[in-house]
Image (cartoon, rainbow, N blue to C red):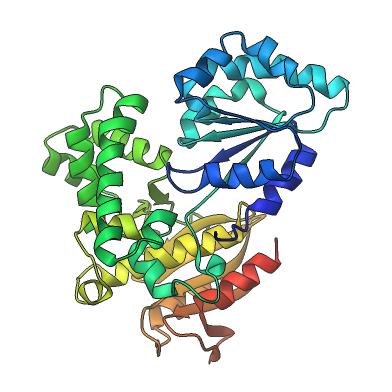
Length: 389
């Protein structure tokens, strides 16, 4: 078992809100985490809405949910039963009047789709996203940060007995998503085309999104590519990182960058099995960049707006974290353990004027680099972000 840092947040949100929606891709650990929460509460009811028997129990959802009294009700794969969300509103409002604390924990695999379905619960539900295992969650004796980078944060991939078994699990996961989830969430989108797009995004990890170029390679229209990318973003498999858009008197890049969110899935799409193979692959730098970004955003939570900064004359910051219109962090990401302070990063910091500026490197040490810029490790900066929660 791995300690998931989201656990206390779920319990806290259940004290504050009638219902909590826990979002995350399939197999990321939502059910295990929900069962851990359930173990701390008496009389929990767990329903898997993929199971026909559990579906039959919700034949009359209003009667069933009201009959559970004050028990915590966990509804897994809730996006499969949107009609239940309609019923929940009335049940929640009734229990609010009775001052019954939060007792619904809903698990879902598609963020935008589930949020659309749960619009009727506005003001009654709190959202949390469970990411893959992060570097801050690794136990003292167990997988290393390098192993996490290569295998990714899905628990069964990270903890597999061998590199080959881990890669097979990820390849099977990708295949099952294409065969099951794509048709379920977007029946008109061909799984074969999604597969090709997913592979193209992997080869272009961390590059600017160009719908026209992808459309030409896939033989479809640019709007179709936009729909395909939207689906992968909705399924929490791809991150679309927006460009910073403030006014600094510079001509800024306006296209977003895309990343395969889980580094292990990225490597499976590229058939990279071992650390040695990764270090010799052209994607190694972009893979490390995406891995660091996902870990930092998991530590930062939803308190910051995340963007990147790039001007047409070359000034660049890999990750900008902004809050309340103020740039709090400017972060450059390097795989080297002895990174250099580049002119492009200095120029970008001069324009953005962040409160803190860091260069993340591949080692564990920390040192000043001048101009209020520090070199630091991934874990050190994650700890700083976590302290600001």
